[in-house]
Length: 276
Image (tube, rainbow, N blue to C red; front, side):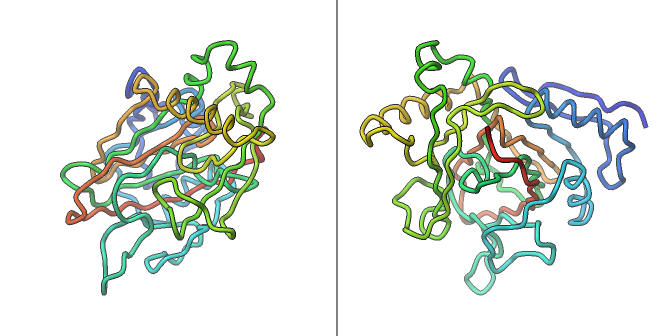
């Protein structure tokens, strides 16, 4: 097949990949071109795909070891790495995870010792308005920090906590049994060698070794900085969209939507390395 065409999505982040049908395995040269574009643009959009669970899993597995679904729910699929994101309910219960409303900026599984490196989200049903995904470029956010701030955060680590049962989409007090992991405030991408901010509003609780008040002030400043619109692309979903994003150098969030409208997406994640 011809080399896939790469078209930038926004000045901030992202590219659309054209000329690829993910129902079929990609030849090695085409897959290498996609992987290179992913490293260059952080998120990739594939429009008008008509793929099933197995085809999505096969494409994801090309990037590395698949990550099992950590939070099971009534609508989980037979494959251990496939999760539904949906507000559709049967017998009063959602068939998928994270059913309703806005979701704060975060990086997938940053509360685990080995967070996800990649997430692939495929749209099946979407509301007429809202439920958009915001993607923020953490390379650009780090590069734009004043030099004194870069020096202040160099070498710091932070505890990331996620209480899926109590606070899955907005920041709240985490229960004692919530999963947590300590990672660098600034991480270096293993493939590109570039530095990216690696804290987020939903899951980063405290900078290790700092008094709570000082940590809260520093994190609040970093959250406000990294969520500026100049770093963000807002994706309006269409059925058949598949987006691949790199959790090592991006954050993502979700806008609110009418809970009476159906939303159904299918997610597969790829296990990453310990951040450094």
